[in-house]
Length: 295
Image 1 (tube, rainbow, N blue to C red):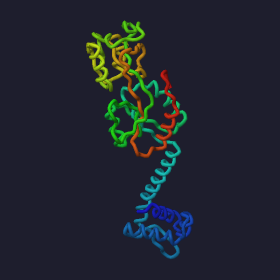
Image 2: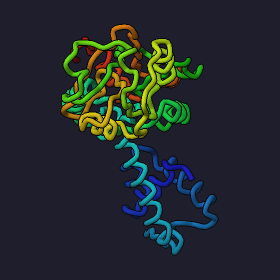
Image 3: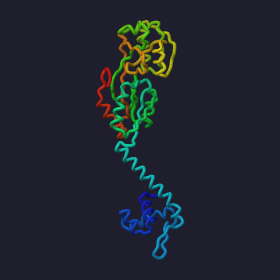
């Protein structure tokens, strides 16, 4: 059934006068009549009966009227929602965030973006790089903020935002806290708390082996906040990206002989048309100047 024909039917059912109904729809009376006749052929029976000088709905017409009203109302609602979306009102932005990425650099940025675009509802999805890549390719995410040591999928387009070093995190009571920097060899014998989702785990292991340093592994977890909390409590140390700390009481020290770093990127799907909210978000990101100490 054609939506236009359904609108003709509703106008005629409300006025019970085809000429007045045609005026309401902005068409000629023959055009409206043909549209209703086409609808009747599709439904298999008349919707209106004419007796003398009066017109009224048939039993079929009375039955389908509320259903057609619902269809037309839903159509108007969809059109209204689409218009609001294009005007960045009532629209959504689905943003993937790598689970090991700290909020310190993007929290303030998202706050400013939301203040400037209050009609955009932001959804943050936390996952590993592998899962974020899958969600991007499947259309479940608009974009992702992530790091990937190896090459990205050929359909994904990374846009570098900033680099961050890997530092050693320790408690204020740890001897490392009294030093300006450490060397990889100083990690020998240290009680270590492993971040399972560390993307550069293998690279850091190679640097440790080259320095002859062996760690004493005490705990492993996918929860970044748990590892940081245990480090702050003095249970051990860990390698941590410099902008990922969320736990109070952590002390971060650079590694003088192993300047390992990771490149944080905005990743989108190459060739896929951006939604209006995503285009506005990318515009905001590109105007943002990421400095060594913040945004």
